[in-house]
Image 1: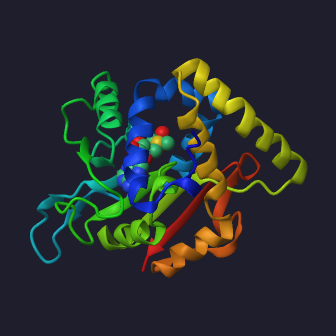
Image 2: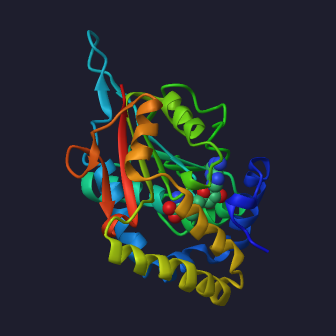
Image 3: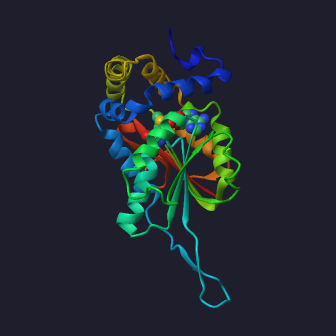
Amino acid sequence: THFGFKEVPEEQKETLVGSVFSSVASSYDVMNDAMSLGIHRIWKDSFVSSMLPKLPPSLHQNPGTSPIEVKEPFKCLDVAGGTGDIALRILDRAREKFGSRDIQVEIVDLNQGMLDEGRKRVAKTLYYNTPQITFTHGNAQALPTHIADSSIDLYTIAFGIRNCTSLPAVLSEAYRVLKPGGRIGVLEFGKVSNPLFKEIYRQYSFQFIPIMGKILAGDSESYQYLVESIEKFPSQPEFAQLMRNAGFQTGQLREGKGGAWTDYTNGIATAWTGVKA
Ligand code: SAM
């Protein structure tokens, strides 16, 4: 059988995505390292540093009153957060770089298997059993109702949005829950522009990755599906335009400083950022 989006009716896509991630959940971290040769770690580190260049002070004084300090933790939502790769990096950066633990990340993911793996991982960290990290089962396209409008400081989604049926739905939900001035960061596979590198990457993706998936996870179809979902995802400027359509302010429609996105490894991965006006 062939596991591409092309053959899958939209209404079955979520079920399919669910089963893909259930079958890979336990081997997910190993596979990421194997398939990206460990480079996904560098992308995620760069992404998180760029999304959290500094931490706003969490202690606010009520204006016009005695200096009673009101604690307001910096609130992050990591959607399609899976096993916690981004969430843990956010918490580590806040603690190691800014000496802050007044920051909270809620992970939302559609797949219970991934959330369970994430919980196991967090149990080995110093964030275990603290309000700093929470896991919620939910859909990026219709976020759980306890996440209120304009309540989030930072919204991240890494290697998750391409699995969603409606990109505009995901982006408009992100826009709704962010505070005005809050930021969105989307890390996803981009399009490689260099023709030679592109061909090498293509061969690697379509031949090497499904074989590796078969050997390491005993499952080549899930990885075939992942490769096809990467091909189907919009280009860098197209996705930036979708962010603008959802209401986000972005940089200019180009790569780099002052642009709407940053390419990693020649555009194999791309980070798009935007701000809710
Ligand atoms: N963010 C993690 C990372 O970077 O390692 C996990 C990425 S993993 C490739 C994609 C995740 O997206 C899976 O855990 C999957 O369950 C989740 N996902 C897929 N569709 C989703 C949806 N509509 N809403 C929320 N999560 C979804």
